[in-house]
Image 1 (cartoon, rainbow, N blue to C red):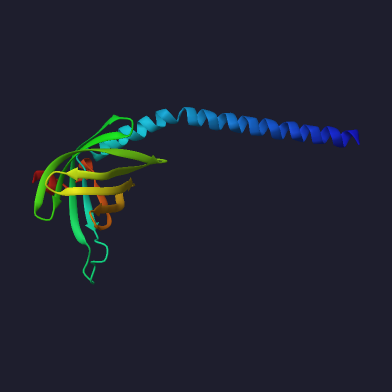
Image 2: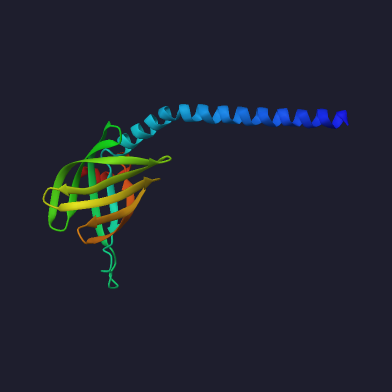
Length: 170
């Protein structure tokens, strides 16, 4: 009987030690998360400066069998300000408008995935918009709202160092 008690106590001690070590490792990983976060932010800043979002957008209730409309957003620069605040300077082509706009907005993170968030932001010459757009592995997807009209947007990201030479010469 004492053998079983010893064995049981040994297993309990090993189990508790394993749990404690695992908890300590998780705490270390969380503590070093700021370094990982800084690296993610730096990577986002570098990749998105000079990038072009090439894709489509839909308007809720307006498909009528037509293909989604094409769009392009050329990002001149993307810079972290402080906290969740970033400044994106983008060339926006929307309908007959073609403007360069500096936009302060929030970037939140879903793990390693950045999500741009703007709420009721007035873009001069275009109007007031609300949008959530996430970026992952060379693609983007999200939702947009402009007054009572809204929809989805999606496409690919052409990074500055990956653009075809013919586009760079233009």
